[in-house]
Structure formats: C-alpha cells, structure tokens
Image 1 (cartoon, helix red, strand yellow):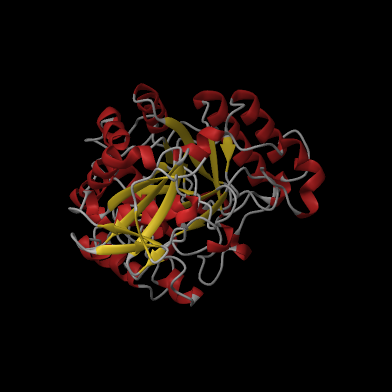
Image 2 (image 1 turned 135 degrees about the vertical axis):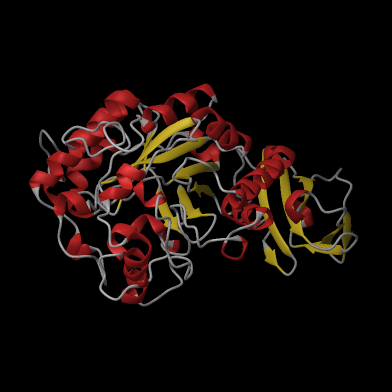
Length: 439
C-alpha cells in the first residue's frame, strides 16, 4: 500500500492505493544521469554513499560527478583546484554550451537497456544544476533544446523506450536548483540549502506538470524533497501534480523523495537509507561510485558483471527492485566499463530471468539466505530458486526445511538438510537450483 506520513495525511490521503503489480514484478530499472557535468566528468571516487560518515568530507570530496557545480565552489576542494587547472576556472554554464551529445543514438541506447532485461528507464530531466533536458517553461533557454545538444533529449528517451517496450519514467530534482536559488555551496548538509519558497515551488510545478502532459511518464522519481510552499493544497501544489499524474497514468508510481507526503515505493541509495528497504522498495546506485560520468573511475571502482549480478539477486531476494545507473559521456556514449557490466547482467537475466522477474521473496520460515557459501532465494509459483556462489563440484547444504518440499521431489536429504552439488558455474559466477514446493 502506498503511504503518507505526519502532518500531510489529510492532504495526500486520496492517493493511497495498492502499488501496481507491474512495478513489483519489474525488478530492474535503468537510471540515466546526463547533463553538462559530463563534459568535465570529474569527481574523487572516495567510496559509496552511506559509507562515509563525515558530511563535510563527503561534500568537499564528493564522488558524485553530477555534483560538480557544487563541489567546485567549495574553497580548497580538489574539484575546485581541478577546475582551475583544467578549465581555467570557467563558469559552469560553459559546459552546457560545450555539451554536444554528438554520438547519442536513443535507439541504440535503449537497445542496450532492453538487453539487460530492465523493465523501465528513468533519465534525469533536471538535476541540481537546474539544466533541463527538454524545453522546460521558464528556463529562458537554459536547456538542451536551446543550447548545447540542441535536442529534446527527454523526448528522444521516451520515444525510444516506447519502441523497445521499456516503461518510461522521469527523474526531477525538486529539492535543489543551484541556478534558480543561488546561495553558497553545500558543505555540511542539504536541508539549510533547500529552496522552499513559493516562487521556486511554482517554477518546479510548471516543470513537472509539463513533463506529465508532454511525455506521460509512468514513474515520477523526485529527489531531495519538494519545496515546502508547494506542499499545502492549492492550484500549484504537489497534490495537484499527483492528481494530474495518476489521471494520465492510473498505473503509474511515485517514489518517496517528495517529503513525508505521499509515495508508492521507498528508496535506498548505495548503502544509505537501508532502513527503507521494506514493503515495496527500490535500491539505486551507479556502476561506480558516481551517477554522472566520471573519467577517474575504472574497473577498480566499478561493479563488474559478477558484482552487479550478485547485488541484483540480493536486492530481488529481499523484495526490492534495482535501479542501476548509466552515466553517458558528453558525446552520449556508454563507457566500455559500464557496457561490459550491463552486457554481463543481461546475459545472466537471459539465462535466469524466469526465476527473477515476477518473483517474490521466499518465506523465511521455508529457507534462509547464507553468506558462507553465498546463497539467496526467490520464489515463483510453487518453485523455490536458490542462487549459489560456490566452487564447481562442491557440496552445499541449503538452509531449507525439507518438509516444505514436494514429497515427489528428487532431492538429497542428509541429516534433515538438503544437499546439492554445485555444477559448472553459470553466468556471472552463480548457479541456480530449483526446488519444487509442496502445494
């Protein structure tokens, strides 16, 4: 059931409903972070969100390349030094004009996305730098149609997604807009820097309303929060946006980053927000430590195919979806490191998709996961699926109650435990064992 919380219960109660099954079945989505920040493509790969406790250190050494416009304004930051040395201290908007997207082919891009098995795609339409990837109202030409690529990139993503049978959603940063709101750089926390006034709330409303009308997304993915002045009921309120969204897409879903108001699913990011991984939820992360393209990242800071598969299976086994990010280059290309990971994930899903997509977590009273050896469980219908990482030929004892299995099942039960022999390693280092359950 979608949820509301706190003081906004009465305003947003009308949107409470059961989350559509398509989203629970989807399991895999692709995030796309693309903007002028892909031109400098620079951030320190210090680690994953949720593993660095010092807020000031995190922002000063931010591993998110899409935060470049903020990091270069922090006095003494390595990004500021890099900006001076590599770009002569250029104004950030010069990157918008230098961004060409000359190699971007939306159909080829969506072909790669579809080949992973992903059921939905969510490109950024406006990140915190305020640059929109469509001709958004009120931007006075500071968008990709009037400058830089001179293309409606949101429209290209949407049209290609429809051609490839992938559901389309939109990311929109309602919580931050450094161009609109100005102000000093964020150094030790976001809350004090969040624009909350009516002028910005109306500006953001016009953007999201335009996205809903023009592109009819099936997922609204907000970030940071919504400006406070837009939360109460009114003509340009967030409640009105949700009304328009669900009228256009009755089966649509919205995430939980609009404030404590309304959501259909909760989100975590890398290792942050793990407390939200319950009910209907989604974990998002990049293949590396950044969402935007970062030229400093390589194999040593990125998930390889085996790592991506293992993370994906773990998320699905615990009842979540994975939103895995692609950060294209300024030209619009997928880097070789990311392409290899995505292709490996796709090969795994080709081989094992029937035990992943549409599955549900296995009841823990039937079986438990393990880490030595690594075992995760899913269930489809009357079949339990064990994904195992172990050496070929080894015997693995599965923590499953034999009494829950179909009596006619051909299984090796020793001392009250189910024992399986691991065969040749499957795609990305995992093998799958299917066990029939008693009806």
